[in-house]
Amino acid sequence: MFEELDYQSLISRTFTELYGSSPAIVVRAPGRINLIGEHTDYNNGFVFPAAINREIIFAMSPSTRPDTSLFALNINKGALVNHKKLVPKSNPAWTNFFTGVVAGLQRRGFEIPPVNCVFGGDIPNGAGLSSSAALEVGFGTALTQLFGLSVEPWDIIQIAQKAEHEFVGVKCGIMDMFASKMGKKDHAMLLDCRDLTFDYYPLQLQDHSLLLIDTRVKHSLASSEYNTRRLECELGVTVLKKHKPEANSLRDFNSFEVEELADELPENVFRRCRFVTGEIERTQAAARDLKKGDLLAFGKKMNDTHRGLSADYEVSCRELDFLAAEAARFPDEIPGARMMGGGFGGCTINIIKKEFEEEFKRHIELSFTKQFHTAPNFYDISIQDGASVIS
Ligand code: GLA
Image (cartoon, rainbow, N blue to C red; front, side):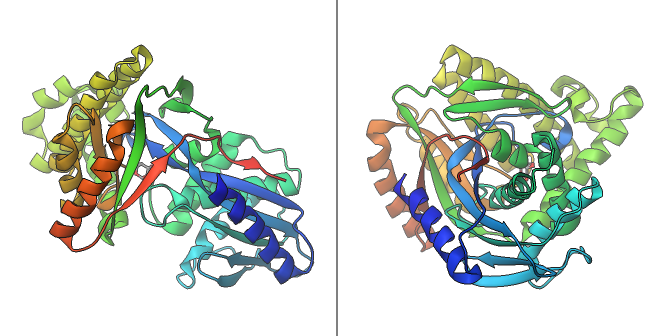
């Protein structure tokens, strides 16, 4: 992985130039894909993510100054974080990822001294590959390793999620942080978001590979609509619960129950609940397909997920629908394709025959550009380990 090595030395070198000595620790944290199971995590359902070969690298040492000093290599900007005043900031907003993590560790009783930190990497921003989770998980991992704190991986995952909720303002589920921390090379993970148990599944795609196609669309709607979807699901539970008082989340209903009670739900809330309950069932069935090596059945479920996210959950956009429809024109070569992540832009994930990949990229490059007057990006993905110390 040429790119990764390059970043690593660049970041260490920048650290030495800025702070006058080499970093005490270098840590990496990957982005993630999700095979299937979208918008299910905050509904206590199943997700099926994996960590990928796109990552953020952190070089860090303790500091003798009063504030933490951060330098973001990709944007060539620095900022300070005052550990005595850990509050969200609107300018520069990117420090919130870090402030949130320090606050989370302190809340658990760890006194975190200031550090110097340079970070950067090759997870495209806003592409739905969870660069934010990688920032939080990577920074948390680096701090706990640097100061030898006894913190479990699940603590870091939960601290990272809380940082996102309280400092960044997105009420995300647990999937992204979980994948960035617990990923395992060449494996996807079926996580039950209700009890946080999970299993590693070898990702054997036979003569297929994983291709991400990035629309490069970044809708400002993404975080507000995301939070709205979450509220709509909660409203659905409040109504459905009248028939099942012991239920706490959409996980406690199946898709038949939702259909039966359709009349009691506002129309859009019904469609949200129909999607989520169907998606939770589909994800479990898809995991069984993968275990059997039935890529056709698995891919068909990915296609169904796209339709549901677009029509029922309404988190797609024209560019994503276009890419999914183009992929569906080649069912023999592309068993499955769908939009991935929170939505309103970002990438589609495609399971594609290796021998067809170059031809399809050329086809999409032309057709997408013709339609939208801008070219998409392509990322070839391999599955890697979760966050770790490099040196
Ligand atoms: C974003 C969130 C995740 C998850 C997905 C949708 O990536 O951060 O928690 O809800 O959207 O599946």
